[in-house]
Image (cartoon, rainbow, N blue to C red):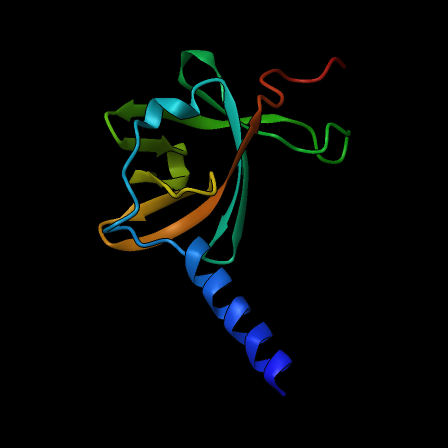
Length: 129
């Protein structure tokens, strides 16, 4: 019984340490996204996007004919804020935060919109025909 309780406490505290607190996790310069891909999720969505040069935003895709990389909008930074413009899909500005385990959080005020990790730059060009 004690082992089960201890395991439960470890799980509770483990989950708490990676959850975002958009008011206490430090905001970071959104320029950290330049030349990087983000794999993030939130609100029932999964973002796999590349922050390409010139402000282009690309969907990473699987690199196949069924799921190719594709330009989906633009991105721009202003200090700790990042703005994504998806054209007719809308424009969104969030503040970027980061915790000690290298998880990045996209915040709208004190509310977390999504969280994820950075990776190497994915596709920033259309596949050859």
